[in-house]
Amino acid sequence: MAHATMGDTQSLDIARLGAQGDGIADTASGAVFVPYALPAERVQADVRGERARLIAVTTPSPDRIAPVCRHFTHCGGCAVQHLRMPAYLAWKRDMVASAFAARGIDAPVGNVVSVGLGARRRVAFSARRTGRGVVLGFHEAKGIDIVDLQECPVTASAIVRALPGLRRLVEPLMSRRAPGRVVVTMAANGLDVAIEDVPADPSLEVREFLAREATALKLARLTLAGDTLYQATVPAVRFGTANVVLPARSFLQAAPVAEAEMVRIVSSALAGAKKIVDLFCGMGTFTFPLAQRAPVLAVDGDKQAVTALQNAVKRTPGLKPIDTKVRDLFREPLSARELAGFDAAVFDPPRAGAATQAAALAGSPVNTIAAVSCNPATLARDARILIDAGFALERVTPIDQFLYSPHIEAVAIFRR
Figure (tube, rainbow, N blue to C red):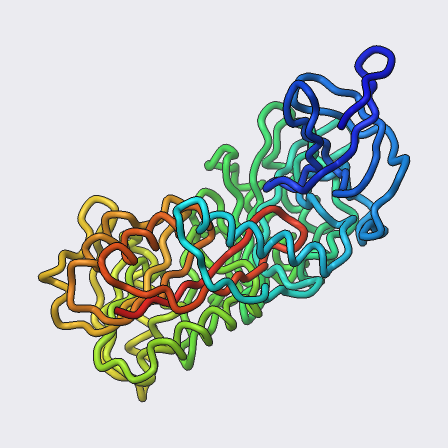
């Protein structure tokens, strides 16, 4: 219960942790969300409606710890660095279980598989020119300014070490008005840097400067609005036994250790399948490991990604046949008839999930399905479709590849 004091300042008892990492106090006027407060804490907070600003923790939780980064609470990249790991993992697991429960599913949710510090290989920074030079980092937790990162413990050290050089690199392209975006990927053979949301036609002088700075940074590639400005080597990633060349702007899982666990779970669940369909296949994260044992049809609406997959197939011996299709599975899912020749499927859609494709799978002869998702709510919705069609939900594994954030991945295995 909350006790009002002078003005907007209130003493609040925090009951639980919300989905975005805010502490939630139950008051006479409804729930109040307090960022950086933890369950079982009493706090002083400046309350404005259902939102509050933490002023002081008067009774700390035994699960409160010191954050690992100096930017925590200022930078919006992390929400819960102040929570002891067992409680943090329980919170992440509960997100997945609650999403399934909301659909009436008592899901067999396993322990969370979490990545360690320095695991992120792909990061999207914001950048803007100021009177003191370029700021490069993430937006503030509760504002529009960019926090100029000096460290980022969750990100690969090779990317963090490059931050000073990246500031110099992007400076001629940045304005004081709208921020630009700098996406940095640690490929298997160097850093791939993509600059977006800035004017895409730099002068010859600026192009020469960018090439010099990219050389000094030892970048694998530098692209601007999808066009290659500099390339020392072709950036690539490894899926199974295949080296896949990274197209600019293509999707890639953020942490290799999380990707490896997803591949392990999916490969294990689909072991013994005679023919597999990989829906929303991207560049072949699952396609290549699965094709070590069985023929695979790989389908995605991203033509660049599918082309990269096809090119890698030509260079990778020893695989079972891999066929490909470029198709928008949201508008035109593979029908039950088209799925008739397959006994197993994996689908890994964007956050919106794959309700229409799940419905087609439900009406097909496919017996085993691995569903990979970055959104527990849409995964649970799609699971309901499959369960109602006679599939049993065998297990759900939460995978925490966005450490200290409110995001959680999950892999669900279904058998008819």
